[in-house]
Image 1 (cartoon, rainbow, N blue to C red):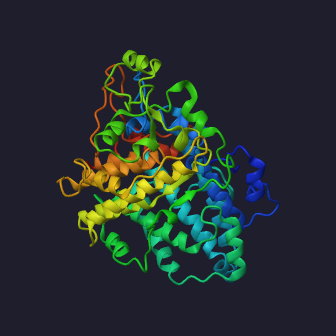
Image 2: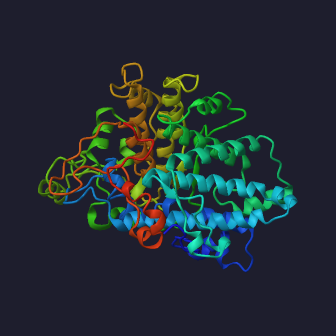
Image 3: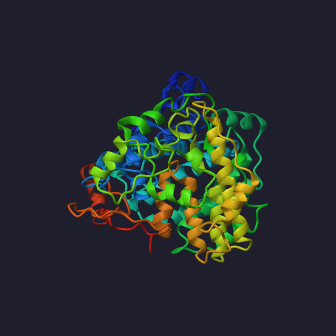
Length: 508
């Protein structure tokens, strides 16, 4: 429902360690703006970190299939997303929204002078909340938003039932607010005491205001590019052509991530449980393995473990289930790398990476939204992605990290037939393929959104003739609880709740 539980979700194995570092504001005797900054960020831990439920129940059997970032065994109704997955993602977002609304209400009640002192807290929470909002819109389309999460403020349940906001209008509102904050970052001054307090409560960027500025502008760029087929694009050029005023993430050191400060603090063994349980959730996907093999991708060795014969062979979705199961039984299918992925207790929570921003730049320049060198941005993105994923491999302790590729090997990869900028006419397909390889399993909502927007790379899916959903969906469905608990507003959008009804930016 659109006004979810007030309880915070702290998912970690060493919960006592986490709560010592970042106390749960719901358990504090004093509700304060600074405590709720921690609460807003922590409430989204389940969708940011590589936790069991997110991977095993929600994303791997759904988005992992729709984007061919996971190998899978074909089954009936395989393209119908489970209600539990859709409901969980919806409810997790509305927990974040509730935290944000309480923080917003506390902030609005402050005296003007106090609001100025706490402004950076509110800006940071808003940027993070808007990031989560975009992802929810991209999954569901229109959602309850502007009126959602205000039951405590209004004090009457019936009067607080929230309307569904138009998805495009939400994008437009977010972009306008982010632009205001982007301009504000150029002049903001935070008093020393509040800067120190901000650093204590901000466990995402650790009080680094420049990082929040880059997050803000990079998120603007993501929204603008996502909606670029149906929304104005002038602001893209304003951002990319004025990096001094509107800096974005430029290097892997600036990537927005929830880093593992110690083994198991956030996710523990959850990523291993999610990927290795039942022996089918770490299976390498055919399309990705083939792409990497065909082009001698340096990331192949750190992304997938070969089969028992030392071969990289992914699970082919066009084979029938009996053939697929036999190959699994015989150990003939490659798996996701144990050190980089499944047994990496330092695997971070990805939010926005430098490579993603570089690929957005490349597409924006190629389409004429900004000036610059599209080829250079594209190849920079490849370099950043290779560097980042080898860095992830080096955090793993399950076995010794692999040697990084040489400059010669990386240059050869960028010159290979299906990767070379000069030798391919469909530049957008090149960029889209590298986006897919970069975000892949780590950011499946972003991977699915970009695949739907661009319809690239080109995938072949088996048709499920016995199911009402024969091909992968293009959006998710609203939870049944919306009909039961917010029926008067749900009735206005229930016709949209169709797996084949595209969200507003998906026009291809």
